[in-house]
Image (tube, rainbow, N blue to C red; front, side, top):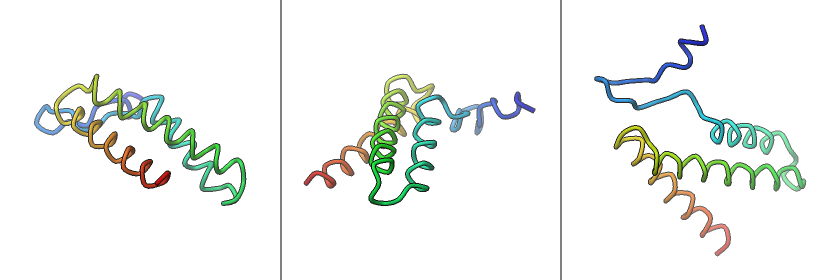
Amino acid sequence: MLALIQRDLKIRGYVVGQFPNRPLWIALAALLAAGRANDASRINDFSGAIFYVALTVWAYEEAVHGVNGFRKTLGVVALGLIVVGFSRAIG
């Protein structure tokens, strides 16, 4: 069963999906923690920060070390969206 989960999702031999790596798991866990926390709590702020850092690490890894052009483009687009979201939050 675990072997089925760890296989890459391929379309015509082109990898378009993979089992989530460590930074993506951390980002998903932080997102869930932030969703369960009170909006005004420190846990919500801390979870949100962890989410963005982990997601940024994941996007960077995809952009630099992606297995193909699709995955590298996905990382670059995600990095761009993170920068836009961050600039809106602080601006």
